[in-house]
Image (tube, rainbow, N blue to C red):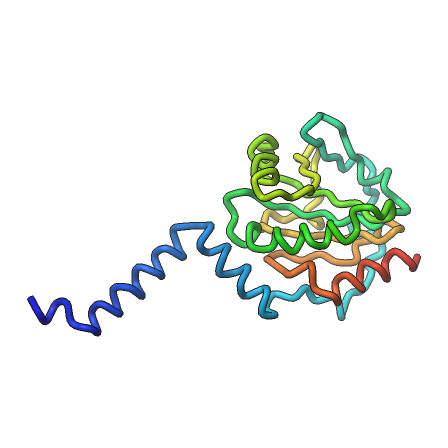
Length: 195
């Protein structure tokens, strides 16, 4: 019996237990990813951003619906910088990046030239809004209300797309990132001032 509960076996058991928790408990995985973001991992790469000459085509008709049923059409947002994020409440990387998305939103929430659209990929708006309320986030939650071109969303969560004021894709990445990073904030400010 003493050989089973030796120090090495106990340490191995604890490590296996931690590994299983990270795999099967999404909030635990999100917490670890969020911690890694805070120490400098998962910075969004805006250094090599080239504006794609409207790679999404005409944005008119790409619509999203909020919890009150109000529709937003991307084509009507020309002249604004648009931060579009596809996420889900069950997605650990989405949950990990949400505090940084919220911090970015807080930075620009009173700026009429920057629009945030957080799209619940499951279209379960009550559940998504409940998550936002529980966390104290004031992020605007939407559901997909039209076809979404694959150039914007291929199905990977999270996916973030930023459009410049001309409606061109200026940033399009899948995977978690720290959007509260000062370089990303500078990137948004630059998009606001250039055409």
